[in-house]
Each structure stands twice: as structure tokens, then as C-alpha cells.
Length: 422
Ligand code: AMP
Ligand code: MG
Image (cartoon, rainbow, N blue to C red; front, side, top):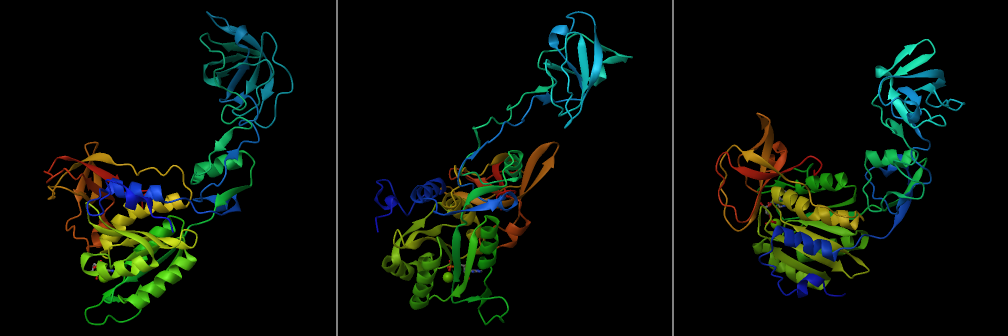
């Protein structure tokens, strides 16, 4: 296969990668998977649009009223003092007024009703006085006020939604508003995952001495399912070359991407490295971050036949942090989402001090709250990379930049809310 382009970059140092650089290297390497299917509007929720949706109609289809009121010709209104117009009928939503509004005339009009011919202004009913057949309009009305023109939302032939958009409820509504019943979406990304480690025990079996239950497969399954991936769970694989090789080959045959956890830390990396060199092309990175320093990224198999590999660290919090920072954007790119944007952060006041070493980005777990209208954040306590409960109670990451050292109580920090991310 062709060499992964990042391995030949001049300033590429796998032992000192920043979070942003690592993410960019991954994104630059990947291309969206090929394949699509046509689905009904409701099935398209959270799927990635494969072609532009072009509006086959004007939305709205007709000039219509934005308010309940009186349909008038602006030229008939007095610039000073009231105008007295004759009531000639009513325009309802879905039942147009058949006639034309001529000089000195007005028609009652409801929200959404088609604008009668001649009308260029709607006066809200609250300011109007009615005396018998006479309708009294106060001065100060503007031409085109409360008027919605045909095509002002979407024009016939114009792109309504661009390919690459992950469809949310608003887009489903737009598709429906165009009268379209089915759309072309990209196929889901297939992701195979397995956990590595001789100490791992699957749920449903008793713990043997020194064992821990495998939790990573469950957090990963949850995160992947939320992202809309097709998940192939391959279980726990022992730290033994033959079993690992078999697992990698099987995964590469059936998936677009493989996610493993464990086995990339310094003590274990050497024998995995040897194996990877035989199976494909994988880089082992030391990323300037905490948690989640060691990570492997590359390809198992060939360019045409094979799968991308994300070798995540074993510690449960590190798995989640590296997933959100690297794997999530990567899978969005593979899924055809365009553009892949970074997740927003905002400033909040940290109410407790935080210890931090210089030189790497830290993703601490925090809980957001409001005090006197200001957003504040409290760290969740013990921040060890094995303390999964810190993720469970958290609703945000406190993102501490590499240059930053300790944080004093009351200082401003950047937070990345988990809402929408997780
Ligand atoms: P490793 O990266 O393989 O050295 O693992 C680092 C730590 O994470 C060790 O304490 C492992 O026992 C733990 N660990 C690895 N994989 C899992 C898993 N799937 N579930 C829970 N803990 C794990
Ligand atoms: Mg291990």
C-alpha cells in the first residue's frame, strides 16, 4: 500500500504530538466510505445526506400573510391621519379570497392565507377599528409589512440542504416542506471493536483472581451507536500474537474501522508493533494529553482491502477521552459528514483549584452550574484515568491548554459540554 502521508512529514514527531495536530493528521488521511441508500424521511434522522436536496418548489409556494389582520394596498393609506377602507371579504389559510382588492378596499386576512391580488401590505388587527363595512387604518404602515413572499424561504432549483449534512429534525422538516418523501443517504460506517488484555473478563462470567470486567466494549458500543455506526463487537482478545493477528484479520475483512482498547502502553507496545508491521501500516503516537497519551493509528490490510485502526489506551477514561477527541471526528469524516467541525468550548469560572503539569492538554471532568447568571464548573474529584465514575457524574470536560499550569479557585477555564458530544 502507499505510505500513510503523515509518516513522511518533515515536522512529524510521533513522540510529541499535540491533540490538534494528531486530530488533523487523522482527518487529512481519511476519505469518506463509498456507498449509499435511499430511505424515507423519518429513517433519515441522524444519517448523512449523500446528495444535495434541491428544492422542486418555492417555499412558501404563494405570497401570504404573516399575521391575522387586514390586507391593503399601501398606496391607499394616508401618510397622516387614518385611512377609511371598505371591507370586501375574508382570506382564510387554505381558502383564498377570490376577488381582487381594488382602490379604497381591504379584505380581512388570516395568517398563512394567500395574499389577494393587488395587496402589498398587511395591517395587524389589533391597531384597526371596524365600523360596519368601514375599516379604519392608522398611519405609519410600511409597504411589504407582514407579507411573506413566495420563495422567500427556498426558491425552486436552489440547494435546500447540502450533501454531507447530518440530518437533524430541522432538516427532516425542510425535506417534508418540499414534498419529498425519500432521500439518498450515505451507508453507515461499519466499526469492529475488541478489547485486549489477559486480565479482562466478560460480564456474565465470574471474575478470576486478578481480573477486571471489560467495561470498554460497553462505553465504546454506546459511543459508536450514538454516532450512528454499525457496530461489530468481537469480544475480548488475549494478549497473545496469534489470537490478536486472527482478530485483526477478521476485523479488517468486515469493517471500515477497527477500534481496540489496551495494549498500546509502553510495556505492551513492542509486541503489538511487530504484529502491526506485518499486518499493515500503523503509527504509534505519544500525544501530549492526559488522559490518553499512547495511541495507535493506521491501516490494517491494504488501501482497497482493509480497515482503519484506532488503537486506544486501556484505561476506561482514556478510552472515552481519546474517542471524543480523535475517533469521533474521524468516524464523522468516514461517514461523509462535511465539514467536520470541532466541538464548541466556552469559558466558565472554575470554583475549585486544579493541579496540572505544563506541556500537555488535560481533559478533566467537571460539572457545570450557574451562579448569579454566570457559568461555573466544579471538577468531579479524583481524576485518575481509571476512574470511570468521574465520567458518569460529569457533564463537561474542563479543557486545560498545554501552557497552563495549576488553576486557582475562581480562575476562568475552557469547558466542552458533553451535551451533543456524547
Ligand atoms: P493497558 O493500556 O492495556 O496497559 O491497560 C491499562 C489499564 O486499563 C489496565 O489497568 C487495564 O486493566 C485497564 N483496562 C484495559 N482494558 C480494559 C477494559 N476493556 N475494561 C476495563 N479496564 C481495562
Ligand atoms: Mg493491556
